[in-house]
Image (cartoon, rainbow, N blue to C red; front, side, top):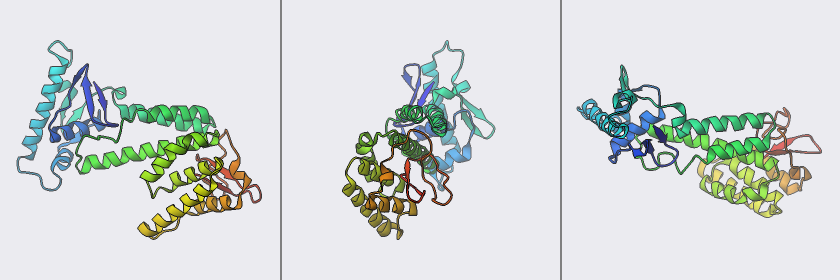
Length: 293
C-alpha cells in the first residue's frame, strides 16, 4: 500500500486507488493514514467528522465508512492476496488502525530525508544537507491533503505538516546562502515572503539574498514592508535580529558579503555567540553576529 498526503490524498494498493470519492470517508482514510501503525480512537474520528455536534448514529455511521474503505482495499488486494482488508484496516480496542510499511507514507520519507539533511548541516556539510533537504521537499505535490475538507483533528495535522515544510525550507535556504547561491534563491524566497507576510525568517533570508545580489535598496524596502505589516497586524516591531540585519545593510557592513561553507553561521545573540543553523554574517568590528533566519 502506498499513501501520499503531501498534496492531494492518494492511496493505492498496487495500481488501484483506494481513495473514496465521498468527503467523510476521505477524512477517515486521511486521519488513519497520518497515524499509520497507531490506533485512532473512535472519539477522535467522530470529532474529526462532526466536531462537537455528532449525530446519535455517529459510531454506526463511522463503521459504515470503515466498511466502505475495507471493500475498496479488498477489491484492490484481490481474492488471492495473503492479506485481507481487515488485516490492513484493523479494529482495535480503542478504535481503528491502518497497517502499512513505514516507507509506504510520503510523510515518513519526508521526515527521514529532512532529518538526515539537518544532521548533515549540523556536521557542517552544507552541500550534502541542502541536497537531502531538496529531496525531502520534492515529495510535496501541493498543500497537505489539498483535496480533503478537514475537520478539527486533520486541520491540526495539516498545520503541523506545513510547519515541518517551512522549517525544511528555512534550513535549505540557510545552507544555500552559506554556499553563495543567493541569486538562485531570489525567485523562491520572493514568492514565499509574499505568501507569508508575517514570517520574519523568510524575509530576513530574502533581505540578505537581495543585498548580496547588489539590490540593497530592495532589501531595505522589504524591511520597511515587513515592519509596516507587523505593526498594523500585531502592533509589533521586527525582532532585534532582523533590525540588526537592516542596520548592517544600511551601514554597508562588508561582513554581510562573507560566504561561508561550514556551520559557523546562524541566528545568534551577539553576546552569547552561539550560532544556529541559519545563514548569517559576523560583524567584523564588534564580533556580533547578525543573520538571516
